[in-house]
Image 1 (cartoon, rainbow, N blue to C red):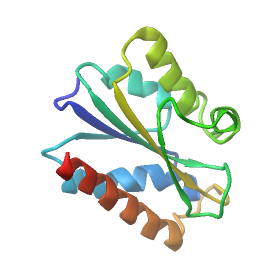
Image 2 (cartoon, rainbow, N blue to C red):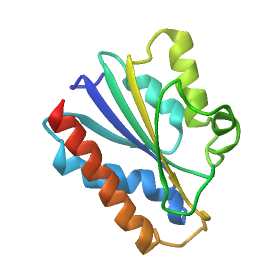
Image 3 (tube, one colour):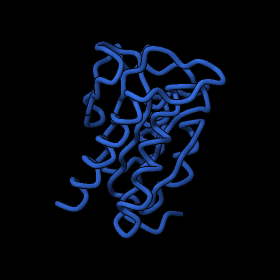
Image 4 (cartoon, rainbow, N blue to C red):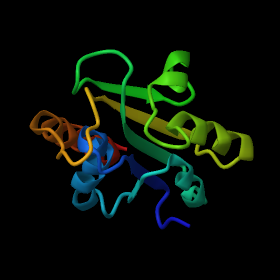
Length: 151
């Protein structure tokens, strides 16, 4: 169970730029601690365990969709391009769109769901997050924090 009506989840892995979703939430933890519950996951299906009482969900993950590395997509669920749901999220057993669809089928999906997809070039084992994506993670965290503060 969460302590806030707003949940922010960073999805990722320890593999290079795939950790960008985690980095967004690391940046957000201190910025929005009184406004949201902030968590990280390696498997998007873990989100299902935290949706009780949540009205707003922000989920951040690396993706391969269209655009250069560092391009940020912002989608309101379920208005996500069909090809994104099928191909853009591949490093996890269950993709983020699959986890959200399952939450909807189970009747636990929050009314307001925003997906932040951050384009990456590659997710290489044993490499750190690239400097360019460090900057993008900070910018996305600040944008999310600003939206929460304005709500």
